[in-house]
Each structure stands twice: as C-alpha cells, then as structure tokens.
Length: 110
Length: 119
Image (cartoon, rainbow over all chains, first blue to last red; front, side):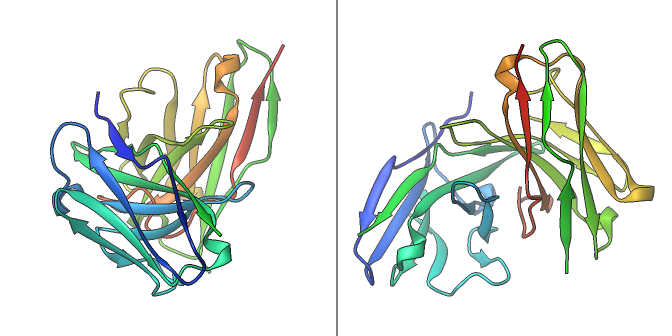
C-alpha cells in the first residue's frame, strides 16, 4: 500500500515563509507524480491551490507556490496570512489512474 | 462560472442503498474527469475514484473498489457515487472535484454531501 507522508503540524508567524513537504515512504517524489496541493478549512470544501507540481489554480494568490525539493514535493507559502491557518493536503498520481492523498499538515499561523 | 452542485445531505440506516450526485455546469462536462473524495470526521482526504464522463471509463482506489460504484450520465452532466449496502463506517462528507488526467482537483469542487449512516 502506497503511503504518502506529510508533516503532521507546522507553525508560522504572520508574514513569514513556510514550506510543507510531501514524501513517499518508499521512493522519491518527482514531477512524474504530478503533485497537487489542497487547502481544507473545516466546514468548507477543499480548495485546489496547486496542480501538476507548480501550476496555481485560478484565483490562488501568488504567495502559494509548488515545487520539487530534493526527493519531495513542496508547497511554499511566502508571507503567510492569518487566513492561511488551515489543513493542507498533497496528492500524488501513482500511475494507472490511481491517486493517493497524504495525511495532511495542520498549519497554524500565530 | 464553473460549478459542481452536489445533492443534499442523507441520513440512512445500515444496509440501505444510496446514490448521491454531482452536477456540472458552465463547462463541457465530458472534457474533465470527475473525482470523488471522502472526508471522515477528524480524518484526512481520501481519494475514492474517478470517472471520465466522455466514455464512463472509471478508476477506483483499491481501498474503495467493490464498496462503491461510480457512474455518470453525460446527457445531464451528472456524476454519481452509490452504495448498495451502507455501513456506519460510511458516515462522512463526500466531495466531487473536477480533475484532469493527472490531478484530482484541477480547480472546482462540489459543496459536499454529508452522508450519515445510523441505526
């Protein structure tokens, strides 16, 4: 069973920069996994931030960016704002039409 | 504006069947995959499966294969997620998302359908 791991929690100060990562327990993440990132706020549907590694979804602020860092996918928030306090999930394409979500990172902005 | 509108909340008993829906509007429904994602209380997002509405080609997560059925009716721009025999462990919020061949959610998501299964 494919396991995708994320930091369980992270904190950042308002205006600060934070990088969340998305890893494969067995293997490296590459652009061939087409990593995507989603913001989940309680009571709201998920919001797509990034797809295909680094393509921002329409309406997503430029402070959100995606990349591959080493052997992991990464979501960087530059200039964090209070309403970025949320859960963040990555998803990887594993081939053969199969996707797997990571366990999510709870980001606290304080 | 692209929209995915899901059917309303459901309360069911264990063993009952259920079909929930996701209707797309303001775009070519057959040009994008529809993915289904589960969010259980206190848990993370789980990818369940997806359908290409143009030909009803379906991929299922191994974790959900055999437990749910995904379908679509392109004539009314609607995708479906159904259960033949619900369990209490199916209690969750279910979302549909407009995806691409390599992305679960390319941009738009439905508002979610809360399914509660309780005796």
